[in-house]
Amino acid sequence: MSWLREIDRWFMVEVLPHAAAYRARAAHFCGRDEADDLVQEAYARVLAAPDYRDIASPRGFVLTVVRNLALERLRRANVVRIDFLASLDMLDVADPSPDAFAVSSGRSELQLLLRLIEELPPQCGRVLHMRKIQQMSPPRIAEELCISLSTVEKHIAKGLSLITKARRERVAQAEELCPTVPKSLNQPLT
Image (cartoon, rainbow, N blue to C red; front, side):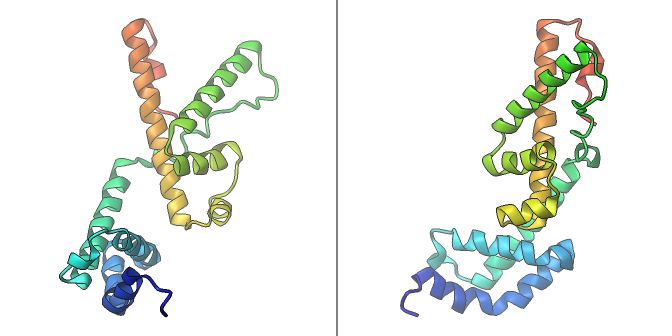
């Protein structure tokens, strides 16, 4: 095993033997279904640490990372409301008999949506585009991008939240420029 990096050997000796404890801690915070994803995310954080040699208690360090990641997920879950998950479903450009205004309005809305998706972090934007524009299912997106279904769902929730926030900011700017903008435009996508 001379091809292993020093950090890999350290990881195998100091971190991996305690995998059951990490999974148990993760399951305590987020359930058995999410535990493996949480532990893998913790491993990635540990392996990205530049000063891993300075970690006095690797087991305790990883358990702390697992706890912090679980708390971060819980905070995010409390911030993103469920109604944001379907916020782009109202965009109905394919109306069977649209009038000129509906077509123009739909195109403008779609162009704005595409611009907002492009402004998202790359992976988040890619996942949201695949879900909302290409109409791919979350499991198919996960398979296509080689990421977990949980990660796909997080990217979708994060993307919808960021887009809703950006739309609200644009409406607020429009209201400052033109105070007669109807308040109904300041509603989140539903």
